Length: 391
Image (cartoon, rainbow, N blue to C red; front, side):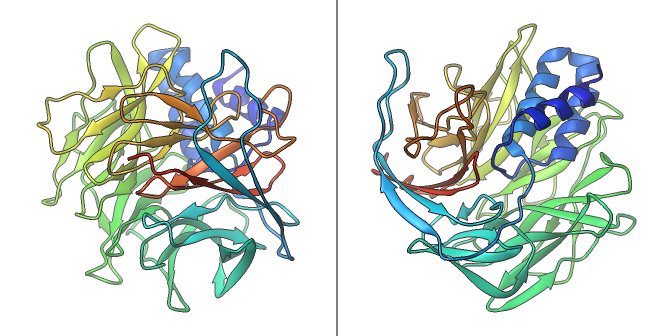
């Protein structure tokens, strides 16, 4: 069985909530990397696909909301984080909501339209049709429309009642956003007709109507590896992402630098940046294991990532103070990771059980103060965790 077939089978076997992970990107990267680095990176890509899922459609009626507290835990499990939980039931298949860094805006796609999740209600934004990817502190939403008859996307932003399509890169018919910062810079990737023909791009807020292709220097990554993309942008304009299968950051002058790893690790991916920290994962060289990592960006280019070996690898977001969350791991049980690598589970709603006994849940984003985390259950209910401040 091919790597792509294995990933497809995993998707068919497990239905889970979406994150910002891109299915085509994960499949393409896993397929290419598996041929060179062995099964471990293919397995990592497969886990990303399972964690990512697809952006579900949502129907909007009055949701059923309640707040839960942690349930009992097994003696070998990590302890629960000090969080309560809002569970919001909506008909249809919800897109997992995201929270802005301030914690004020929680936004998700409901009935195919961007909606603010507030007081247990999904309130649609007029004219904001499409799937939500990210929201900034001013409420500017980044998202995409699915193209007719294609698995590709077209990027847009929405603010103050207006939806604006983002420009395409010359020679690339499709665009997908991944993140937005406080000043409104959006990053993502431009795509060709081939599923892994991607170029990382920036849509700068100070130059509306323009798109910038980020540099992909020769010698970065392995030739022929697709799936290059920008995955995060800090408020100071530092961009992080992947070039030909290796994690990079782009500085303000447009130059790219590799995000280094300590000896014994390879194949890093970077998924988010907040403040001075970038978050991602890496494979253990020669081992059947993938681990979460965190980079301290102001350090010199020779300083390696900090490895959080005891935590699930599938980090999806982090804070400026070093806290992070995972999508849910193999068991679909999301956790919050302290700066020192200590793991605590996020509580699940009553009746929701991790795999294999249940369908589990997934987390997607965390506010800068660590108090608000968003996610969804495997049976498609929206989740908002309210946590004690971790700082």
